[in-house]
Length: 84
Image 1 (tube, rainbow, N blue to C red):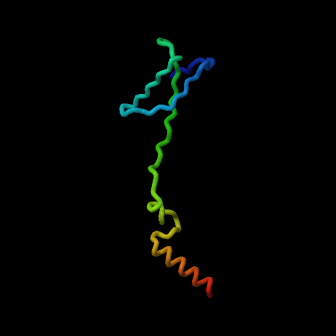
Image 2: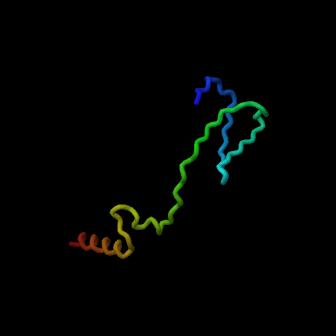
Image 3: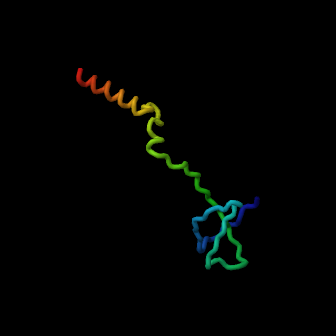
């Protein structure tokens, strides 16, 4: 691929677009002149993980208790240790 010659950016156009199912982006702007050439660079956002509910998060971390019963048992043992 040949390197493009340097040129001044006169009026950049920035848009947030959604890629359609065919992988197509469509840009419409009044300042675009029919027949003019344009350099286009596309930055695709990283996919977002689906949001998880609080119930799904409970016990999912390293070293955490997996169930409410385990948490209750842990707390009971800690309270007994404080009393002794």
